[in-house]
Structures are given as C-alpha cells and as structure tokens.
Length: 370
Ligand SMILES: Cc1cc2nc3c(=O)[nH]c(=O)nc-3n(C[C@H](O)[C@H](O)[C@H](O)COP(=O)(O)O)c2cc1C
View 1 (cartoon, rainbow, N blue to C red):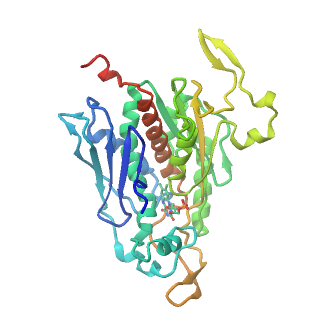
View 2: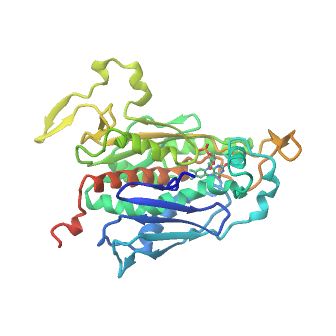
View 3: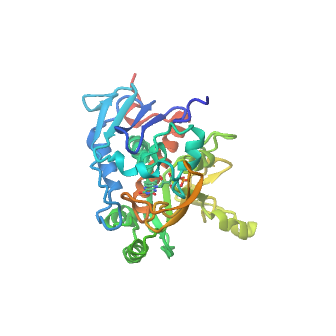
C-alpha cells in the first residue's frame, strides 16, 4: 500500500481528509511557522468565494461550509503545531446517490474507483473524488496565501474562458482584484462575464454543461524558487493543479502556443528597468528551468465540462452486466469554473509557500526573533 498519497508538500505539508457525503471535509497543515495571525474568519472569507452569488449557475447544494479550527492556534496566532481545520457536511443526503451504486456515471471516477477499492469506496456523490474535497484545498490555501502575503507575494486566479466565450486581454492586477468577485462567473471583464453566464445558462437549459479555463497570476515571486530536478516549481504546480478534480490541462506562459513560435519570438529578452533585471515578454510564464525567473508566474488550468448532466447517457449496470441508460440526479453545477477559481488560486499558493519555506524564506513576523 502506498502511503502519503493524501498528503503533499515538504515544509508546508497538507493532509486532506473527508468525503462528499461523509461527516466532514478537513485538512491538517503541518509546517506553518508560529506567529502567523490566523482566525477562522481568514479561512471563512476564502471558503465563501466558492459560492458564487447566482444560484442559477451553481448547484442548489449551497453548503454553508462554516470552518472550525481544531488545533494549531492560540490567542489568534499559529503556534507551530499542526493546524487542523474542517467543515461539517451539513447538507449531505446520502440516499440521493444510491441508484448510482451499480451504474457508474460517465465522466466520474465511479467505475475505476469501484474496481480499485473492491466496491468498498464511499461512492455517494463521488465520495473521495468529489469536487467537495477542494474545500480542504481552499482552507489550506487561505493559510498559504496569508503566509505568502508576509513574503510580499500575491496569488490571483480568475476565469478567462467559459463555454466558447473567451476573455483574451490580459487584465491588470488592479482589475483582477477589483472585479473578479463582482461577477458570478469570476471573470474580471464584466462584458465577457455576462456572455459566459449566458453560455452556462444555455447549457443548463439543454440539460448539459460547459467547461472553461482558469488563469492564475503570482506576482512578486523572488528569483530562484524551485528545486530541480524532480521538484521543479512548474512540475510541482502542475501536479497540484492536476490533483484538482476536473482539471484536464495545465500550461505556463505561452503554453501550447510556444510550439508554434520561433526561438526569436518565444525567448523573453532581458532588460534593466528601474534598476531591476526583467524580461520584455513573459512567454516562459515566470519559470525557467524549474526555477522562478522573477517575472510573474502565469499558469492556466483547463477545466472540463461538469460530468453530471441531466441528459440521458449510456452506462453499464454492473450488477447485471447489461448496458443501460442513466440520467444523473442530484444537485450539480452546469459549469465548475466559477467554483474552481478559488481552488486553483489555493492550489498554486500551497505549492509556492512550500517552495519558499524550502528555500529558507522566513515570514516577516518572525524575522529577527529568537
Ligand atoms: C470545485 C469543484 C466542483 C465540482 N463540482 C462538480 C459537480 O457539481 N458535479 C460534477 O459532476 N462534477 C463536479 N466536479 C468535478 C468532478 O469531481 C470530477 O470531474 C470527477 O471527480 C472526475 O475527476 P476528473 O475529472 O479529474 O477525472 C467538481 C470539481 C471541482 C474542482
């Protein structure tokens, strides 16, 4: 049995637990330095970003997801001990998924999980494979982002594509901060956001779903973060992003488009600006040779259309070994992207803070202390 597959990180180590329709979703964070001001409200405000304001475009399942910190803080500061945080699954309705026990839902992990775990897996709502597990990512991400803030690093994610609606202009950091969470789809461009919403509603009306792309920018990353060969910064970020359910592609900077460019077009020339070495372009997406280059890290994750759709689909009744049809019931989002935005942001922050601690960065609050 392989151990540690529910944990990630070397200095900022997170271990996730819980299932979609189990009692709770939680995370244990080990390695967070002592002295970080941390309240439940810090985590709650990040969790609340998972619930976009328009119920039409997210599922009727509107968990309150009220966070509890069980350990690792005292008098409002982290103590250096493992931090355990969780939310209780108040809205779990286990019976709702019983029909699916023997009829695996297309696009979900139901079938391979049943084979791997011999039928003992908690299949309710996808169990351990549900998008609900990303509540743990967001709770750990809230702490990672607070720590990164002490290093002066900011991580921001936003939707750039939903259905076939694209927002291609690179927004300014100010626009991202100001506007992303003003829109239900979490796209900082208000015009594109409206069209994206329409695309989601159209798919919903058809009993279908749409996917999209989440972009994440990390600013003020020091040069040289990353541990090549096998813990390269881009490799670790990509791995964490692929651990987010429904992520099907990851690219940095020019990404797949780099394959069509000439070296002279793709290389980012160095110049000096305000006494600092920067590059004129950022096709590398802020990472060279697995090390941060000092330019903003720019990474995109492609999110597939929600697999649970109300249209009829072919599947197999495993108890009878017969082909059959399934119409997925339950409460599902016609598009995962809006909820995935804070999740992607958290995933990137978790990897980055781990690498900064590995590189010996000490949070400002602790500098100069015994
Ligand atoms: C934040 C989030 C929410 C999700 N919500 C749903 C959902 O409501 N319905 C659904 O069918 N899939 C949802 N998913 C995706 C499935 O969990 C995922 O597609 C499935 O477990 C199969 O994993 P894979 O797509 O990574 O192969 C969600 C994913 C994320 C990240």
